[in-house]
Amino acid sequence: MFEEISEIERAIAGLVDGAKVAMIHSSLSAMGRVHGGPAAVVEAVARLAERGITIMMPALSYEHVTPERPLFDLERTPSNVGAIPEAFRKSEGVVRSVHPTHSVCAFGPLAQVVTAEHEKDRTPVGERSPFRKLVEKDGVVIFIGCGLRPNTLMHGVEELVKPPYLFNGEVSYTIVTGKGSEYTAGYLTHDFKGYVQRYDRIAGFLTKNEMRTGRVLKAECYALRAVPIWEKALKEIKKNELAFVDRTLEG
Image: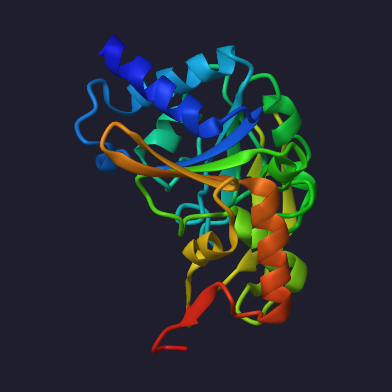
């Protein structure tokens, strides 16, 4: 198991490629049989933090926190984006940003910096969100066995342009921070009804230096630099606001 953890650490470090901040999207099943399960992957990530790399993972909770159940508890509300992010969320020393549906967890030297002030945004991927700070810190987005579609950073680009499919009105949520604080605030929500996200198309606009490939155990992986994702996606969506979505039959 310890050799496997070291192998995972080396593989992810290769994808990070010198960046100081990395956002990881992942599929545990795509990695094959992992002795120790998601905890082994989290241990590998913790070792990367010891090298000075801050690791972020999405802790999205939109399946648990809804207009019908508008309560977000910073410490208790689970993530709904896979076993690895949920194990990461529960790990000692991990910091979670405050947002009812699109929070992010982080561990490492810049964890407090990248998660701070997300609660001041009224959209999921606003200017104070960890996703935007990933761009500011010239970070990298890593996809482990999940393809390129679950790229939440792209929502930030969409929020600047405001395409017709994106927003679906405001919802009032109750936020419990776990520090004896509870408050209510309104947030704009995302919709996408009638559309399917095609964020994998960003690969067609990136150079070889901006997108690396590799493997973590059996999982096919991609590592994309955050700055060119942001700049090139914004350029394309300004030209065509449907550049990174397809209409569905219902649309």
